[in-house]
Length: 86
Image (tube, rainbow, N blue to C red; front, side, top):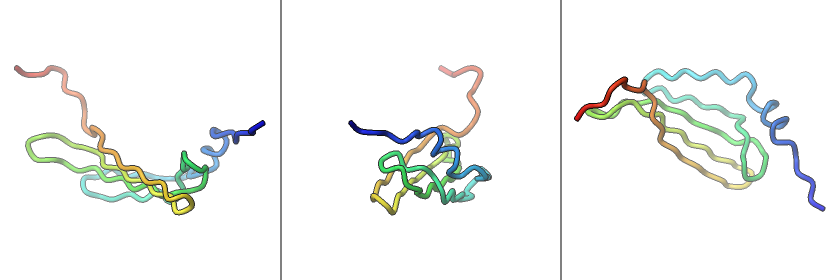
């Protein structure tokens, strides 16, 4: 029978005091991020930037030296508009 680690307890101990400053074009490095593939500590980099004629986005990158897992994401980073346009 396979025994799984409690991911919630592991996540609480990793990176409790990480401070994130999402100023435009400022890269934030979070050194002790939980790797979802192997459970070891990886590194997350976050950057908020503005794309001209579009909007603000958050670019995130994760890498784990223990297992080689890598992940990148682009997410909406600004406020939601009250009304759209036609």
